Image (cartoon, rainbow, N blue to C red; front, side, top):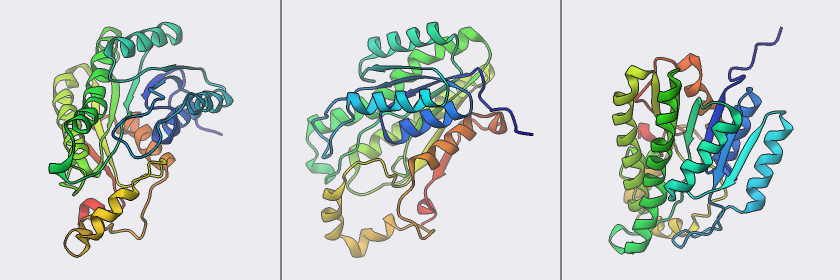
Length: 271
């Protein structure tokens, strides 16, 4: 006898859903019975060395979710735009009937020596990666509180949200900020049975081209190289492996976990 899907009749709100981890999370939750509210900026960012997600990417996420038999409402919305994000979420809840899980995944990445990062690149990183998570939570929490049935929020941080990863200063600052925000919100929302956790992946195969980082590291390989070493003999994680952990954190199997920094790090943080 097959087990019932863990998330039947539940609704997950996922940011950065056009590709990578966000798409994998949308598909994982849908495959376990959830309907999806998805958004992505589908735009180019000034500070990133790789192309942004596209409208076609988001349309493909919609197609893949619908192929599971679940419903999805997807909008082209930037997490930096609180009013737009709130409107998209409100419309999604009105259409799908409720909200259970909040996956604040949208993010960008760029590298450089900390003192050489431009003010504009620094601000863009914080606006997307940190303020975007704050906006996501700010829009979602009142809905969860009004429902009065608890809920689960998972913020995508990084190993760089727990250690001083060289050449990722703006990224690490934002990801450390996400970790702190989640810990505070876990305390504030615990009495309402709203759990808030962070996941901390090492490198994930999301299509972000970070080759410029390799040349920076090459100049410091003997001293800084060990920081990037993993305990397990693997270098990269598939997005669906991150999605599996996120889904578990949202499930009843993890009902006593909140304020947790969950490493999905190939043993990197063990170094």
